[in-house]
Amino acid sequence: MKILRHLISILLVICLLVVPAIAQSNDDAIANSSRVNTETKKITIDPLSTRPLYLIQVNGDQVLGTATGFIVQKGSNYYLITNWHVVSGRHPETNQVQNQLGLTPDAILIWYHGKQLGSWVKKKEDLYGGKRN
Image (cartoon, rainbow, N blue to C red):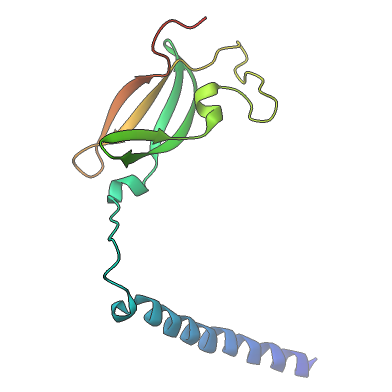
């Protein structure tokens, strides 16, 4: 029993001292900017695009559910990226309407990040251009 306790103590010391030292040396190598090829095309990401947006599925004034999404830009166009079931209101495997009343979303309320950190702007985005059948 004493031998087992002694082995466990040795393993704990190895885990607490040796493993973090190895991980730190790897982090330094990754962060060393002298190893980065600066001649490649630089890609920048707006910090706000890394945070999810709060989405609310609605049919008229009826709230159907909530979800998340984010915005990407391609050229001068912006696109909302979210899951299919969020905009369809249907189960992804069975294609059955999820709302108990049989309603599917006709719009999404999107809470965008405001210009000041921590502020939000709500905008309604219709999912269909005209009347739905």
